[in-house]
Length: 129
Image (cartoon, rainbow, N blue to C red; front, side):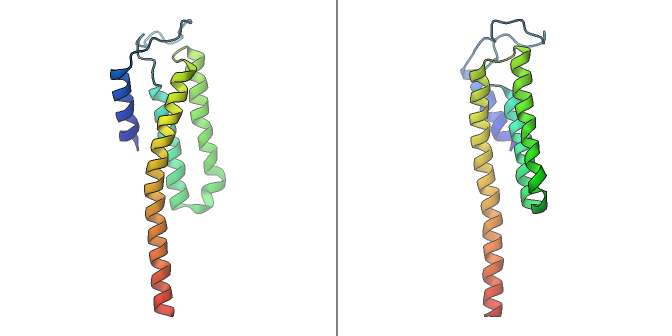
């Protein structure tokens, strides 16, 4: 999960050099020209969204509360904007690429789960019928 998000972030920061917003930056250690995209937000979406996918797969009863984990990337996005670390479009780009990657990985994982379930159901039906 993180390799795909990290790979996109690494390529995007090498190809696109964008200055941070012209506001007082609250974190003095930030590199001034690495604003696009937000690696913090992309990582938060991958980690917490990936955790939701794994919980959905391993513990179906956890679905009701697992979705609360998705509020954490929202908090990360707001914090990075408040700190002056990113433009809103930097955050939007991170939401788009991380969510797309999460969807690809989720489809693969959930596709495997669905196929193994279908296989078990078909096997049971052939044994019973």
